[in-house]
Length: 506
Image (cartoon, rainbow, N blue to C red; front, side):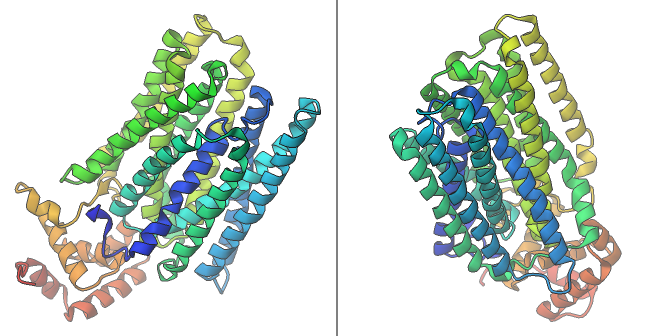
């Protein structure tokens, strides 16, 4: 856990306690959208559940589009909104949308036994759309917080919160169906309050804005993993409908999903907590593809046996991809200071649109597909083919990607102690460790630390500008502050300082 105490993140124990509210939000998300737990008190049928989740996805997409338009318009203005104002608006949106959504849903539950199910359709749609809007606002709150953390910290933080949420969700499945709705409301509101509190304490780190060069550069770097995650989301939505999941008892489905997700989270945590050498997020991301492929290959063989394990493979693959993509986008926002709303919202539109498309296609054709059918085998083979195509798109230029100007989001630095633990560290790694030590000693900001390393590596200011997707004037401004903090006046003095041996007595 010492890896979470990163000086550049500046998080206190109170901040970490509040940040754990992200796990509460994830539990709400599991209960409301990724299982039938929230809708279990009423017999609305599988079609009602699909309608509710589909409306939630559509609600997220619309809310994300509105957020992009509003935030982009404000950031292009002469007076960008203060961080506290943005946070307050998101929290207010969360509270209003979730209150309205749960009110409509409670009314639908109340009348479900007395009226025809068809009459509940518009109310389920409205409730799903409102809760989708609330979910989008909460997602952007936690995205803003994640963007204030270093890549190493955000990766461990998000993974741990996902693991904790599985434990809490396991407990949640044991409560009475009557208590599900009010408990879900409390979880969501508690998460939103925690997000506001922790963001208010870090307002100085939320000076996000918009810079066209940086945004275009990040878009070039991030579109492959966004596309890959969208494909996996489509496959997950499709699998949920065609795998006969609706014939499995809710308890069996919940337990299978829990254990499969827990195993994936454990695999993601091992390299972050115990491997001393730098981690490659691209390689971790690639784990999601064979997980989903395995589910589709097993689909014709075991259908919905073992509590729907084939569906769990597809869902876990999408979860792993989304988790790593979250870390990539949070790091991109932190380094470029681009508003997380403008980075996360387009990605959420694409992935939710893909998941919605997979759900609709699967639901429309589920009645025609049965175990042993040729159609089922065809679906499995075509799906695996699409996943292979996704792998080619994502990783055909992996070697070039490591050299692409940007933020090297594939590498998670594990801190200075890693170098001393690895005697065979390369000169490049040793230089990075030395620069990290100096950056920490002199209180560099994350952006100053990035530029300091590139200056020490011998890059020119124009080259650094291209590599970091920022203007040359921005680089010059940061370089000037670096020189002032180091009390030096030239690149030669900077190189000499880096080459000096570290003083172990300090």
